[in-house]
Length: 262
Image (cartoon, rainbow, N blue to C red):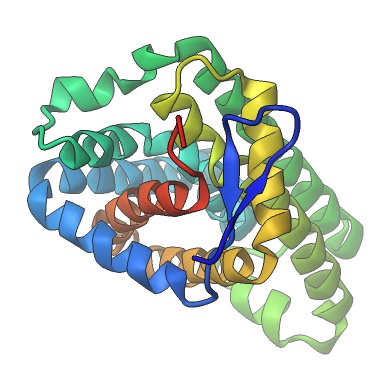
């Protein structure tokens, strides 16, 4: 880490420049946190897996299983708000404290309104993506969207589906990167410094991406790869992936934001 850069109108919050390979260090530290809090990590991972199954069940009940891929991609959009308890466990471990399930689940209470507002913003992005995905399916497939059994073949293997894939991937990627940019440090910052408000936290998060674009682009790519690995294993991989990324994201915040008072 070479230098700190003043960020916006709040001199107390300074963004550091980091090296391109720093995300590997975050994953290593996240794994150490996971090993120190295995029950808590597995609990959050199981919640993510159960959520995935509930999404599948809901889509099946609504007859909209063709939206399974974009909606499961919503994990990338709302994941940061689901892991606040893991940030709290990592924060407390730094201070030499253990974290109970109650303390992790009550982490929102450190800054409830501001953290909730970030969560609302991420949920709105997810709803927007779900709506856009449904519109794209209707645009390209009309009133006869592909069945679940033919979903992969009709969307990935048919030549006529290439424009659908390109546009869908571009729209989803843009929304995912917006969600990543607004949350990469904002939620840990709000948890760590309750005096910070949501607008300031989101601005700092975007500035962190601006200052460290390529390292954080690499971090975003790792998050996508790990999340996909968790999803394609019928959500079982999320039992490890979600807590690993959650703990690692706290260390990303620690490296990207200079501690208060320096």
